[in-house]
Image (cartoon, rainbow, N blue to C red; front, side, top):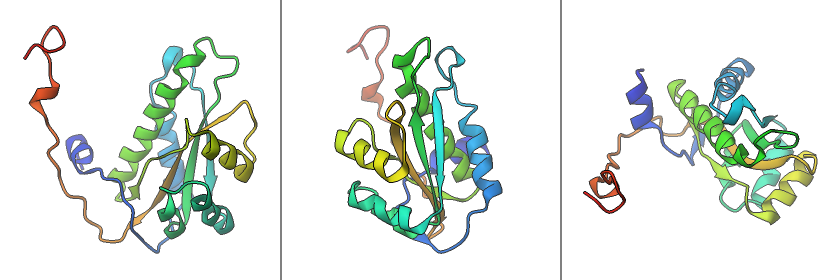
Amino acid sequence: MDTYEVLTTRRSVRSYRPGPVSDALIERLLRVAMLAPSAGNQQPWQFIVVRDRQLLDAVPSFHPYCKMITQVEVAIIVCGDPEGKKWPDFWVQDCSAAVQNILLAARSEGLGTVWTGVYPRQERMAQCRETFAIPERVVPFAIVPVGWPSDGSFKTADRFRPEAIHRERFGAP
């Protein structure tokens, strides 16, 4: 699958069919996550791979938009660890790039994912920390369920909007 096909067919998948996702596949996703660009190459991310059924099933109790996690066998929690970094304020952008790499790599493998944000919702962050024993200095950023899409299809969508493009200055067509 070429890059443009991956980019144009990636979707937020909210319905999954049963099926294992191997440790090797998860490692492939994490390897490309860690290749994401980061400010000053600081790489302020940490990843929690969750397969424990009780832990996965606990997530919807504190994250109302992550109910689909009960359908998958694995999820990746992406966390920011800005402590001691030269440019700590860039961790959100850095972790966003890592999440996007996970989503795109998963798509290229035929896997479905959905980016469910934890940060900056304080209640979600607190419950996520408690559930997954995340230290206070580490910020739970996103939960990414990973699994096999129930329908197996990834439809192309055209979201190009010329009105969102400005030339030289904002507001200039």
